[in-house]
Image 1 (tube, rainbow, N blue to C red):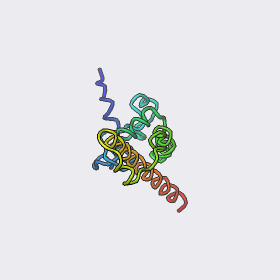
Image 2: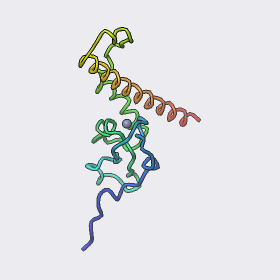
Image 3: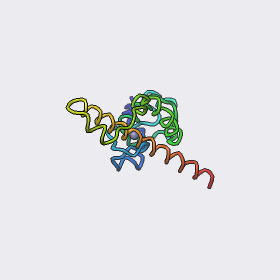
Image 4: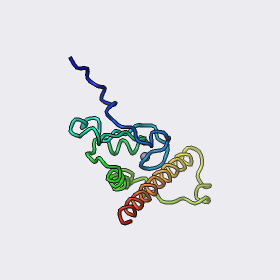
Length: 140
Ligand SMILES: [Zn+2]
């Protein structure tokens, strides 16, 4: 009888696993993204299976997406972030004077949302820069 190999062992480790950064958005990574998704692994040859470091947001957006190359996944994320975080991204900017007129829980809540908005915007900038670098690599 042959012993079945644990599923995760068929994934090759990507160099990003040595870092704590999300391979897609560059921010702190707390999860491992399996490419292709664990649920679809049987449909792909072994050579195409890789594991990369990812943040929980990128990983959850990608969840069962059938894209197997990193540039396609980056493009997918870049198209999904504005939809997933539409409300947050549409939040108006607040200047210091406006913020100083708030107090208590309302001020904390607005500041927390502004921080979250900045984090999402930074992720999107990183994704966009990656897309540009992929495009430049193809042109060269
Ligand atoms: Zn990420």
